[in-house]
Amino acid sequence: MEIIVNKKNKEVKILERQANKLLVVVDNKKYHVDAKKIDKDTYSLLYKGKSYDLKVVSEENKRKYSVKHKFNYYEVEIMDSVARYRKNRGNNDIEEDQSSISSPMPGKVVKIPIEVGDNVVTGQTLIIISAMKMESEYKAKKDGKIKEILTTEGSTIEGNQSLILFE
Image (cartoon, rainbow, N blue to C red; front, top):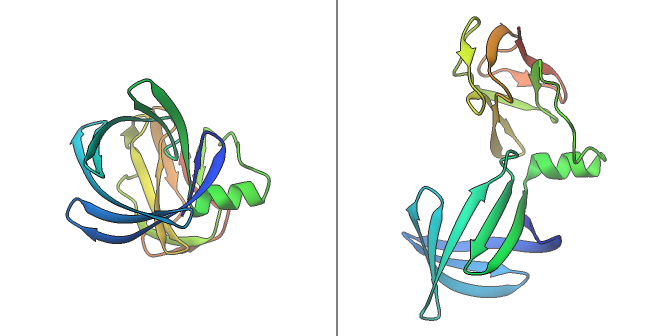
């Protein structure tokens, strides 16, 4: 997986995971770390006998994070399949249509946890799509009411196909 840290690309792979212990490769260098979530947005990492507490805050875009360690601040972006697809098409900063939900790439509908007529709130999961062996949750960008659902669970969808409409 590709991760961008302060505008520098890093290739990251998790080779082994046993409970909290991880063997991680970052740009071809191996790290044995013990990682544990302490609370909602704080993680503790142990590396070579030293403890690192990280405050991780998700930005509006669920692929971007602010990470703080003591006096150091990092902007982190996860380049998953959706982000990579948008970047390759030159649509990295798409302002999504506020009246509908669509997937930028073809995939399969895994789950639709809402129904027509439901009132939804900002950040609520509306649909889960599986694409390129990854599941992506699409969330409401604003409070609203579901006007129409244009697909069903298990359906195959096309890229940029409207899936859910808001009133």
